[in-house]
Image 1: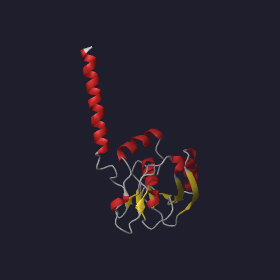
Image 2: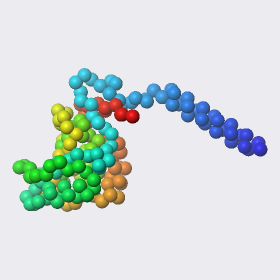
Image 3: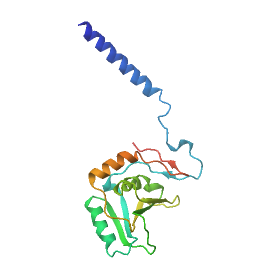
Image 4: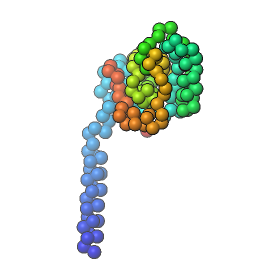
Length: 171
């Protein structure tokens, strides 16, 4: 009986501690756009699910049909592929991800599909939420689901690029 009273008391104290910590949390809005300098874009840093990611797949290699093949791979993984095509400038990297403030969370997910070997170009003036995926000469294949999950764990959460602020999270 005495042990039950002690356990009950400890549980009540823990509950009080948690409530006080939540009420006094001064970092509740940390990362939100409250202190953002005027004119800086708000970056959508919410990690997206594949079904919510819009992308264009471009072939930056001499390999014919690569963009269409990889676009099909992305579609099979539930991504929204908007356009496919060839890019004039060839690249040697695995891939290049180009995106704007609304595509930060989407680009973060896509980085995992290239095991963080893709280069990325952030354009603060870009207005859409689509990510351009340019496949390069070093590209071999998209990562497996297990590899993507491990890579996402290694990457952590998306962060706002330099010169931008995290957009407030929608509830």
